[in-house]
Image (cartoon, helix red, strand yellow):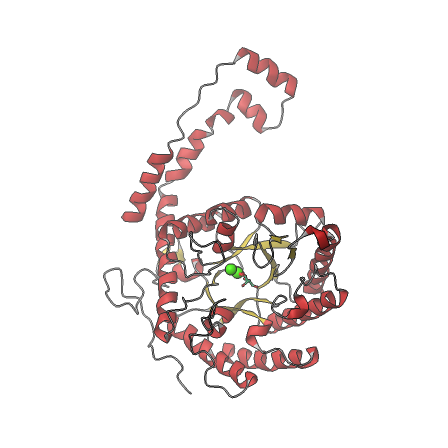
Length: 436
Ligand code: XLS
Ligand code: CA
Ligand code: CA
């Protein structure tokens, strides 16, 4: 069998190791809070960024060799399967995520595209049987092709809507074949650029219809995956309908879909919405819809979706804190929806990027576990809300109050004494845990 990457198997060597091609913090069998690290951190390879992205941007073409020396798109697709499995095995990554169109090419007709995906995914299945590698989630790319220039489920063109439905059906069938436990809907071009040409009510209704029939097919087809919506506030359209967790929750409630969908939270999308990654994870968690994570990061000085590998330990710690508070991610995992920079064009760069991301989350998990064990934030927060444990607070908490009653109470207790929020000391404490 041909070897695609001239990098050997990556092993754990510990924090003191100077070997860049080794894990310093990710020790997959090590037990953290009673569970091996690899179960807390179900890392996944993104098929698109890892095997398809070639470093191009708006100003220049490819900088990377990722065609795997193939003569035609189908041969290329098969080679990507071999290369992808080699890559995951060398890094000890046990999951992958895919779009229909990055696993197999788009052909001249939809029927042929479906057949191409059937063939390549058969081969993926074969490779899965030979290894311990599983599918975390599948999705359909309903945003690249020009038929989707005005969206898919929200397109003014009913034929584009139907085409998207067909692609979703096929992608769901493929996810079922590959045993995927999740299926993702990222809104792609589901949004708009100007109200001068847009019927927003109709578009939102249609989008809900598409999600409703996909939900029905999830049951009917026996896929029974956890369905995930991935919020993103902008890019490609100016106004994306799935802006952030709370917007999506409102949308799902409006259309009676709130018990059918959870969320896939991406760090870079959170920051594009002017939220922290932790905010989005927290909102999803407290509403019981934290399903899975796209682990990446944006560049705070660039206003777009740069999809960089996550190396920010502060964010990773607070992300893993939310995950642990959630009791884990259940069927979900941590997908590296991240790409190496245009200038990082070697094979080795791809390995180094994954190692950096995996180690950052592994270290984040270790710190978050310690924080929770010591109840650092919990005990402070509990104390901060103490006024709701007795007296009038207890009644408010139990929803046993009226405006009149509270008015009488406040007239008698109109000197409100606050206590310090102590943000700085908490940040200092958090740093101490990170530095240790
Ligand atoms: C794009 C999204 C996309 C989804 C899957 O910004 O992150 O890659 O994760 O379609
Ligand atoms: Ca994503
Ligand atoms: Ca992104």
